[in-house]
Amino acid sequence: MNLSFEKKVALVTGAGSGMGLSAAQAFAAEGAAVALVDTNESAVRTAAEKLAASGHKAIAVRCDVSDEAQVKAMVEQTVATFGRLDAAFNNAGIQSAVSEVADASVEEFDRVNAVNLRAVFSCMKYELLQMRKQGSGAIVNNSSLGGLVGIAGRAIYHAGKHGVLGLTKSAALEYASRGIRINAVCPGIIDTPMVAGMLASQAEAMKEMMRDVPIGRLGRADEIAAAVLWLCSPSASFVIGQALAVDGGYTVR
Image (cartoon, rainbow, N blue to C red; front, side):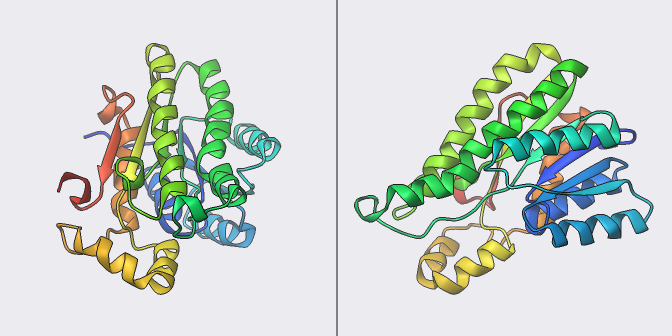
């Protein structure tokens, strides 16, 4: 299986911690030059410096992905630094509070989906402009098990994650014949700082969800990174527009 990214350039959003950081580290380990992107500049700067100290090519980019102008600048900086863009993991996301739809606010809907859905569109737009010039590239969008199923109290979050899959499938059809592959990964309950916060603040709801995970444990960030690298690699060259569930069996119950 060919997972080599030698002489390739990868961009990862939400790379300050969790799945994004693990994916950025995995791309670097396989030879890619990596742009680590996050609103937390100190986190990605520290991560990029560690990669550089180990002999990898890496830059840190502060970017609020809900701001289209910053997204455009982020992609342009990556290309200006490394010359091209071969792989992108649009991973940045935030959670919403548990709420019935009738009690939720439009402000909360807009806040969450500015990052979870609109930003994925913006990132894809500018990544695709570069990849279209090259005639090659691979994009993986981070959806969720929440893009595949519904869960009471999480309509705002799940609406955005379902939307990510619609974007992914439609864009995949537009670019499949032009050397660009677009897919999505749908993580289950993964051991990340965001999930740790949910476990602390929404303990009962999380206990119920964990009871529905057949494998009986939290997923690891590196398990998501492995799926992302495979989807971006030549080994997945015939995989187009898919939503790959990496969820310990949650969605096949």
